[in-house]
Image 1 (cartoon, one colour):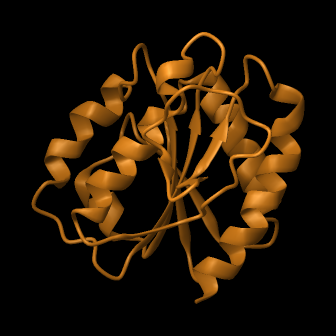
Image 2 (cartoon, helix red, strand yellow):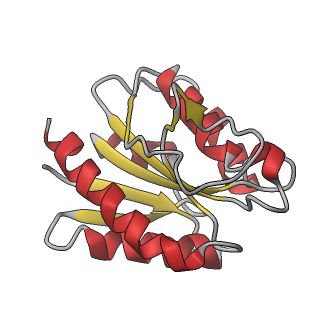
Image 3 (cartoon, one colour):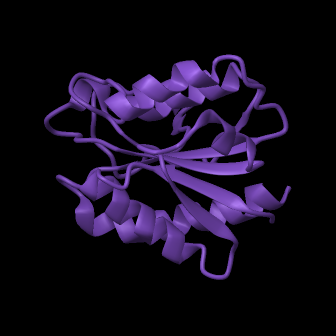
Length: 169
């Protein structure tokens, strides 16, 4: 499967907790945790397989640390790289932009040549709109730690099993 980079903010408590669950679900795989608060654009080039943890802030925005990092990656080529994205959002409080950050990140990296993997079914979620939905499914793993935290571990385990297959291809 090769080395995988797991990129997320170590300071974002809920995202860091979920990243720990993702890391545990990959038991035995070569996964490096990378703090996006301290990362440089060169760190992204070290991996052909990456997982990004991205909470959606406010009305469908990226967190500042991701928003400030992406311009540094504008000139990079992500062809031949596979990227999976998990995101945190609130289906109840922010139903009109649930986990939009997943969609924002996916679009950015697709435009840089990356292949986005790790689609997840819509079943079990209730929301109005999301930039993370394409062709009747999420393009990453959405998690609602506010309203459905009890479902997160099972969803993560299911998603990681899909990623293990997709990362091997």
